[in-house]
Image (cartoon, rainbow, N blue to C red):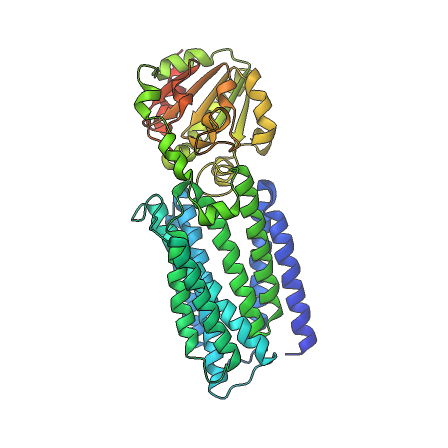
Length: 467
């Protein structure tokens, strides 16, 4: 293919990637952004296959068919609550793919092949791809296991863990230096780079607690982009470098935004644990809840909702688990029909991944203008007649604001406790990801509506109709 045509096609694909990312920044344009990005990737793949003069397409077609089937099944079967785990797996696959491609190029060069970039650049980029790609792969798999609750729940710590991680990182760098010194004769060391990096990925993610998993997922997403960009330098593929850089940059920006939303530094997420020694000073659940919990029913909540001027709904992970978004929308529509102003308070890290609540509510056709971000909705709680908390926990825990010794002290929260009345819908008094009790549940203006979020919403709708 003419190099000019190839470069123009890559430029078009890159522009589509950029506009695709821009579209993903708002729910109203997210679908269009996703399609633009997908179309850009299609252009990049087709042009690359034609430009590289592929001799046989048998394995490519087989992989395309298999991937299409797996993707279609996942699109239909995966529940919204499992999206964070799915994203973690995708990150991991992207990382290991980059590492394997870079390794294959090293193997080809060591057996007499040629490269289109300076040998030093080639070797450094291959080493970086192996290191970052395998850390992304095994780290993402551990994140998946943690999110699914299969193993490694909580903070898995051991004496000298930071020293051990540093030694593994130094070992990886030493192996890469040896490969750069003689890429044609030392390529076998690349597989040791992959092995040591794989162990390092496990060691990095295992100590990170569940409360920090949303941050870890976005960071691993950034890593997968960086691994792809490094592989682009190995292959001298412009569009892969651009796409990987976009993913890497957007991932790290989102990671920093989420760290800010949780009042956490990235260093603390990676090398510390949620709360650390502060967990020892946390009051027990019995001390906070005993004799102070007031339960309510659908009929009582229905009476309280009658004639209210404003209601704020706070969605959380419990809403996602129960798949209650459609029932919540129906309740909101009933309230609006009676003249009540209804808004949804969206915390940046509600759920298990960025935008989790936005996607759930958009699936139920909740109007975008009713979804209000934390900083904008917090002043409204003091004038709110009633706040309904659906499965949220840590993001509405007033300890973050009131208790400087709390493990989540300083974390920005939704000020639901300032509402005149708070109804919390939860299955039980179990703690959130941070693993600490929530004094909100015991406050004088809080009523606990125990049960499944979806069923409780349906019961509440029925009670309003019968009233």
